Length: 141
Image (cartoon, rainbow, N blue to C red; front, side):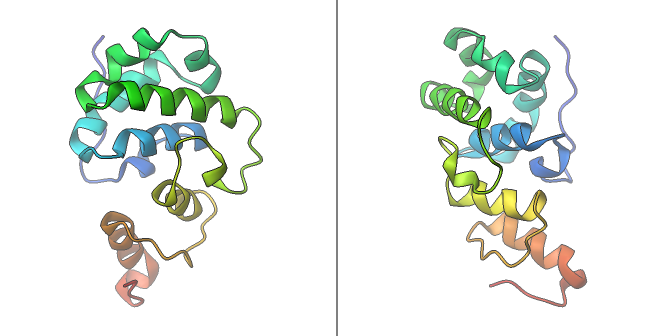
């Protein structure tokens, strides 16, 4: 299966279509550099385009795709748990989804709720906010 990698000059969050794909990207980015994720995520989303398709798969099918990212047993469990929670999630607090912590919550607030008052600790989210908000006139520390 030949799938194009994501663009290198944009954050993963800027290249997904919906909240579920966003959370998948967040889980894949945990303890992993963005370059391997930008290669694996498109393949993953082609095979599993939504939460239900992932939940109807076997752990082995998921692991086969995410193995290059490392921590594949933990990642598979988080992806499955998040997808199960996603089906009934009210889209208010991302931390209510299994496997989503501060980074995922901050990222969701920024990219989906346009809440730029969050105080991220992740350097890439801080950089994005500094570049996007008033073209750097407001600096997030």
